[in-house]
Length: 311
Ligand code: AMP
Ligand code: TRP
Image (cartoon, rainbow, N blue to C red):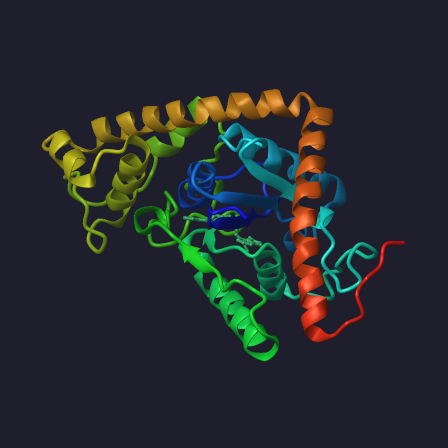
């Protein structure tokens, strides 16, 4: 048995690119955790279709999402990367795909987490409630049928748990509700990134200082800068004392460009070899399927369902 704790997380293929909030709040931790944890990551296409999606676009975005995760540093030799719908979850496991009618959104998410026996789930703050439900379901099942599921813990880093919209720094940066100018996409070109950061809403005054209440725009930019550079916010405040917002935003823009350019280039290289990408995902699905199958066999036994035989 592996002495490492297991992590599992997922991301929806509902946009043409992940954004800075996805990257700092979740994906970057996924990359780090590969070295210390038994890591499972999935592109959650079934979650995406809980609202209407264009089928061809969904197919494309699923591959782009997987390629971006690899571009950001996931390594199939160190983690299991797969597409959610490739691993069936219904009780007749192996025979039917879970239909969205079977699982409402948070239940489907709990199924993902519990099926893989995740100890920790690296996500942004907006997922905390969903994780609470997963824990409750695990505990209830365990109480009734005996120890079966690991009750998962959230893995949320406070400094990056909620990145705000550049145009409305009181709202979360969000694929679905932010305006394009409010979001920096990982796949944005350098010019677009520079323009968006230059136009980010700052606050009255000219001091580069963190103050979530009085200066939400500058505070958000300082947190982004600090997360990408590794310098504490206080160090940055001292560095930009008396310079005004202009120099600060210019440096931040170059930092974001330098952070995202390699990811964009690697993503493009991976997408150029679609067959290679599909092989990585098939391999990931096979690994994920083995773990899920073990959990489902235990669940069936605990509940008293007749064991499933090979057909
Ligand atoms: P989603 O795009 O909803 O599939 O989210 C993928 C991951 O990114 C989840 O773990 C979210 O919690 C995280 N996330 C999304 N938006 C933000 C944000 N603005 N700040 C921090 N994390 C975020
Ligand atoms: N609901 C998550 C989001 O919108 C995505 C997700 C689906 C997920 N299944 C998961 C996250 C399992 C963590 C673990 O971001």
